[in-house]
Length: 200
Image (cartoon, rainbow, N blue to C red; front, top):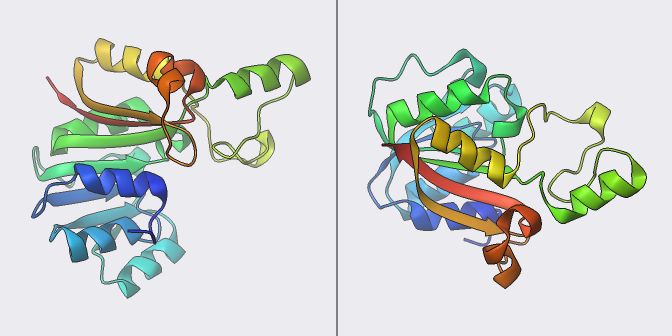
């Protein structure tokens, strides 16, 4: 599993063998390729980038070229066991609509995002008066795809308001390590948040 990003390795542990999976913003298809070979899953990736579409085709990963902000209207309710979206939530124009669509078409949904509430981001902003740059948020403000950054607290409040059940949560640093501080104060010390959610 070493060929996958550490974050994706954790997601693979959450996926049951033989599942039907939809990967939103699937990138080059590495996650689906691994799951096909090692978990015997079937499914599709969705990505708008032509280079990523080509990469998926080369990996023999089913791919649909589409804009996530346009919705998932091509898929029926409960079409998939898992709907996955990694590091794309903050780049969407309508993240609340995409999350609603995820829990509609999937029995379980897995979402990951950088935690903007991390203490380093707070200190950077307070001391320098500039938007933070970190491993989790590497781009400058003018050169980032991120338009809806959120914190762990923001996301959990959103889930509460929208009646979404949080089945699993993993708050880690960029190297996917966890410690006592992250468990006690996830919003302050977590760099990357991973959630498995479903409709109540």
